[in-house]
Length: 167
Length: 279
Image (cartoon, rainbow over all chains, first blue to last red; front, side, top):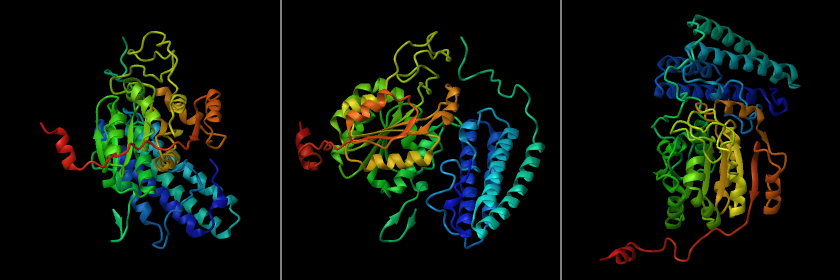
């Protein structure tokens, strides 16, 4: 995914976009936490809740003067930070949850690195570099969190009472 | 809810109720719910002047998840309920929602005649090509050779799938569009356009069932924005549909038929109604 760098007109706009990414990710993780709680996978629900709560300090890190998110976002409908809801599985383990978050944080890192490289506005490029460095920390922390989670067995998605049963 | 004393400004969250969806994790219907509430917010619709009406099925649970007025009605009859509501209360925005089985099989006849009647309301169908709530039977839009479910006949139904857009267009719908749940912002924009458009608006949303149709996870890799703009020419829209592979997203047709409005609709006083039903 290549961000439309031309749509980012100022440092303030980039910060607003970056904060919107964190906020939207928090909403998405909270929604998935609720979905997994309803479907009785409490381990995955707790992991998604942890991710949602973990986004809050990320949002709080932005300067108070960061403006509202712009109407047009440079990634279109493919926000790199937001977990793809179609990528979840009803039997997924916390390891999968953190791995999913890690994949998306890596995409965010690439996103900011691309802006830093390609923007012809020095203030935007400088801020994008700072955001990329920040994202590197998030990636490292998420990788540690995933690696600390129990590794699922190979048959993690075997369901003795599958929704789509065989005759 | 936020805003001033003079004019409230609603956000998408204002239209989401505290009831948590019971859809499977990863179901496309979560995104459609978000798109509908976002469309309501974009149009700043007043919740007490907005109704969501549904039939039966997974997607038809949607009225419970919104803060507008809602009516979780009976199987296949949501359009009749929605039309009645709109005719009795023309000041209300009526959105009818449901799935492909509810709308095209049990409610197939209502669908045809709702398109013909052209009441000013919006019909959003979350199409996953399967009856999910009842564990995976083929629906009218299921591919003829699909037999991955034990609930499907070996080799599939062998039946030509229902083509909702073509049928809506042929039956007289005044606005026809197709969206993908994986594009919630794009879907919200189309739903908002559908609500604004006078007459009967039909929005088919491809919404994957990740439990019974796991292969639909691949939809996100094959859908694409339609290469052409919408048309006001029904013949041209029909021609496009004949060469369409089902994965072009966007507004296909914007008609200009006058919405149905029977003389005297919504005009009866309570006293008149009481007199009519007096024994």
